[in-house]
Image (cartoon, rainbow, N blue to C red; front, top):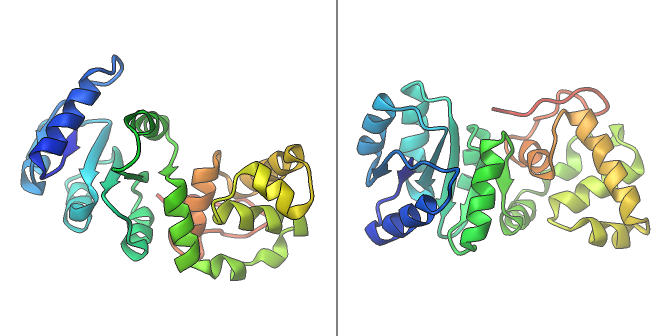
Amino acid sequence: MLLHSHVLFRTSLAHLLATESDFALIGECANTAEALENLANARPDIVLFDFAVWRVFVFAARDAGYRGKLLAIAEEIDAAPCARLLSQGVSGVFLGSESTTSLVQAIHVVANGGAWVDQSVIRILADRYPYHEDLCLDALADREQAVLRGVLSGLTNRKIADQIGASEGTVKATLQILFNKTGVRTRSQLVKIMLAGGTTFEQFGGRGRLIE
């Protein structure tokens, strides 16, 4: 389902989704009230919604019993509400300036249970919320700390490898260790639990939890 107040944007996006054989658009909504009415009649797997209405829509949808996936589409990113949005179980934030190919990819990632956080969003959040430096990093090995900081800064595996003087294969192996320790499956999920709400790890070195 699609929720966006801008008619031209909503119509264009609806046409895009209609070209994807594995997508079925069950509703186009102009406001939160219309979206909630549609949710009462149908249970879409994913709702794509305008970031601008998140404060009203996300809480109202959850109060109405909707437990599907939520993917926000933003014109620009303000770090504080973005972090708050992720902490409420929204599966990701997609920048409207990105390509349609990226949007299709984001929808597939979210549909499969992953989290979509654009690299530019990661950089903004990391710059505005550098508290990850203080989150029990002493419980991680030095290399794990270095790789985690690189991920939270939005660096690629190659750039992290160059930064810490290791091979790209070593970075990938270290990432897998971090995934195992925190109970996540992807880089986006790792970023999400670190940026969404402060103490999102029950313990480093033990089994983590992803906030939903």
